[in-house]
Length: 181
Image (cartoon, rainbow, N blue to C red):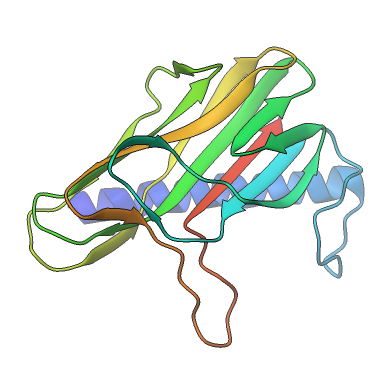
């Protein structure tokens, strides 16, 4: 039953993201032939991590690729918004738990302060490598020049894992999306 609930939650988030993309495309006249994010829309950023990130203690997730943006700057692994407003934010790390009793938590920070109720947890008690994607997401009011970061904390053998399947696009160690609503 827990697995069905988890699958339903992931599908709901994916559905919301796809609906948002469709609405963005309609508003900004983006066609299906377009292969890159367009810069004609309002404030958005999609960033990702291209390398595996071993996690020991609490660290900021590394976002080293700007996959597309307009009006939100990625500097290091921090996203700075340039307009005040409500923003939808999604942080989705690809987690590898490599040992029993391993845990990983992931949450958002704004200007170095934890965002309430944004933390998600993955843990295992089995002693075999275990992979999953966890999703921290929400809507929050941000002021001009607010800085958003993704924090992760791990115990045991834990990493945000980038995977390069033969003949396929990279599975990033984390995908981060933020857009002004």
